[in-house]
Length: 154
Image (cartoon, rainbow, N blue to C red; front, side, top):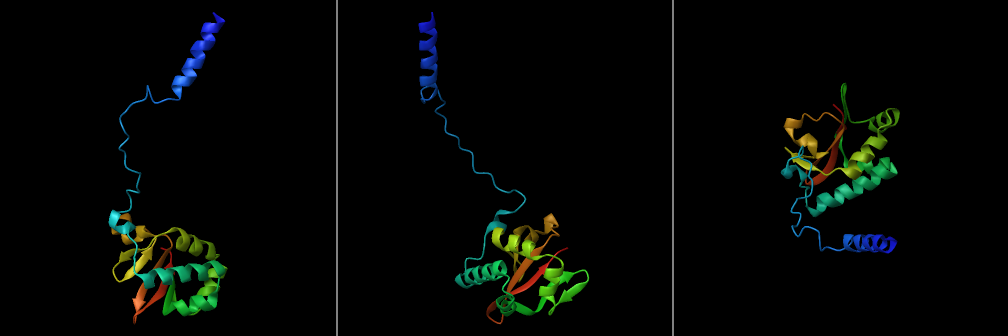
């Protein structure tokens, strides 16, 4: 009796690992996608100069290289909506409000989406129906060159 139980157990283990009793039907499920972001918003600007600009911007932000960042920003760079602040004082504002980690998180994890004349990250901001009011980055072409034009919240 013990031999039969051991034999049945061995067979169960052996057959459990093979595909003999498994369904032949393939799983045709598509990968999960974020339904909150429209498919067209997941497309990023594929222009080489844009990709190079974003790459340099990421490096400068991660290194907190204010000289490089300043050269990549527009003259009227927006850094606060309430109250409205732009231009000088951005780096001091980021330090005082500990915004470097937020800026770094967005630039390294989010894609950019087109919104009017701007490329924005995260792409949820480009979808008016989502009413996104968190931190966001805006980049736009000014006089033929890409410029970092805002990093605001609200």
